[in-house]
Image (cartoon, rainbow, N blue to C red; front, side, top):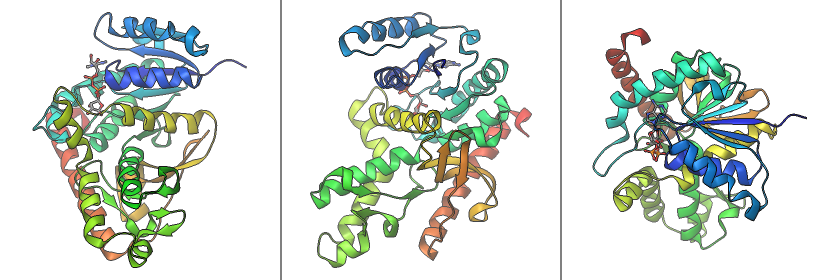
Amino acid sequence: MARNKIALIGAGMIGGTLAHLAAAKELGDVVLFDIAEGTPQGKALDLAQSGPVEGFDVNLKGTNDYADIAGADVCIVTAGVPRKPGMSRDDLLGINLKVMKAVGEGIKAHAPNAFVICITNPLDAMVWALREFSGVPHHMICGMAGVLDSARFRHFLAEEFQVSVKDVTAFVLGGHGDTMVPVVEYSTVAGIPIPDLIKMGWSTQEKIDAIVARTASGGGEIVGLLKTGSAFYAPATSGIAMAESYLKDFKRVLPCAAHLSGQYGVDDLYVGVPIVIGAGGVERIVEIPLDAKAKAGFQKSCDAVRELLVACKAIDPSLN
Ligand code: APR
């Protein structure tokens, strides 16, 4: 059986970490693409030289030529610029929209059958734009945000409850960032929902509210600490979980920015919802009943994403 091929568009901090994880897990051969000359080649060579020590055996290639992504099974896109302290994800819109156009055209020409995972911010708008530019079917593209947001939520909850992160599940909806909607009723420790844990005296509503707020600004907290860029370990790990579910047909249920066509009362928008990722790409959108508070939060989140799409269309009229 031929090996899978994973194309990583963008060989920066997240791209390099994606390559390392994909290689260490032997998910397939890896092509790192970037416009910066030398960067993808250098990272690919460095990573290839860790193979004999770690014991993984995959081909790693760095390139500045889109032709090298031909036949990729998965494309993970991190090309663009990250945030600096004081910037919101939305501040990246103008510059990263242009990058999505170049990347979308590259995918359209060389890897139109790939499952595409977008990580570039502002995520929900960029995955929509990348889909428009690449022309891939809606079920073959989604954005990585919810896996990361829920991982952040799980980490903070595990700390609060003093239990293993392995036993904490978290449920988040909506756009990436400030307007994300953690649904505490569906977030659990070993199946026990958070509201019950509060009743059991494991925590207080105030503490959970503070954790929710910290999760929503979790990326900004890391930007503030790093000062020169944004988070990359957890974003890359989250992207790999999505790629692995596709390549191995795991059918994992993961919160991702996926195309809604009526689900949750939303039409033609990419926004974070639980989906099933398997060999068919986005195989199912999981539509759960929401209470009034979550519904209102989700609506607000969708409105914020829609506003960004209006801004995208104003910058690039070909998107109208
Ligand atoms: N085509 C390909 N690569 C590009 C292009 C382009 N048109 N424009 C920029 N790049 C490359 C840069 O050369 C750089 O190597 O994208 C890479 C981005 O890497 P970093 O600056 O290290 O950013 P990173 O931390 O990896 O984040 C990438 O993901 O989470 C988001 O907000 C984050 O939008 C940012 C993206």
